[in-house]
Image (cartoon, rainbow, N blue to C red):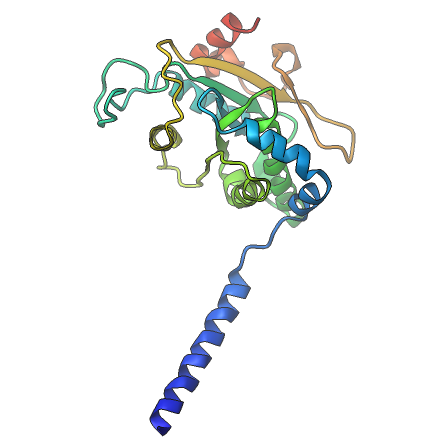
Length: 254
C-alpha cells in the first residue's frame, strides 16, 4: 500500500511538472487576434465562408522578392503527374488552371530590420494577421495561403493559424523558416489532399497586389500593383525578377 501511495505521489509530481512546462512553453495569443474576433467576428466569419473553395486563389504574402520568386517557380512548377499525383514530370504545370496572387508588402519591407527588436517582432505578428485578412477578402478569395518570409513564418505563422481557427476559416496556411522547404510542393500536396484544384485546362495566371506606406499608426492596405509605385530602394523591376509572372499579370490585368 505504501508503495502504491508513493507511485501516486510521483505521478502527481510528474503531472504537475508537465502542466508547468506546457504553461511555460504555451502559445501566447496575439492581442490583435482577440480584438478582431471580439469586434468583428460576424464579418470575419462571412469572409471565412467565402474562402477555402476550389474556385479560389493561391495567395502568397510577404517579402516582395520571395513572393515573386515563389510565384515564378509555381508558374512553371512541374514535379508531379497531374492525373495521379506521382512524383514524375508530365510536361504540364502542376498549378495549371490556378490563379496565383502575390501580395507584395513593400510598405514593411525589409522584415529583418523589424525582427531586430521586440517591438518589431510584435509588428511582424500583426503584419501576418492583417495580411491574412486581405488574403481572404473578396479581392482574393484565398484557398491556400503561403507566408513568403522566414521572419513572418517564425513570428506570425502560428498567429494566422490561430486567427483562422477562431473565425472558422478552413484555408491551409503554409509557412516555414527552413530554407530546404518547398512551399510549391507542399501546396500541391495539400491541394490534392483537400481537392482544391480548379481542374481547368489552362496555364496558371498571376496577379499582383502591393502595400504602400501608410500614415503613422495606421496599418498598410493592399492596392493594385503599379510599377511606378515600387520604392526606388527596391533592387530590380518585377519584370526582371519574375518575367513569367509579370507577363501573365499584364496580359490578365483587365
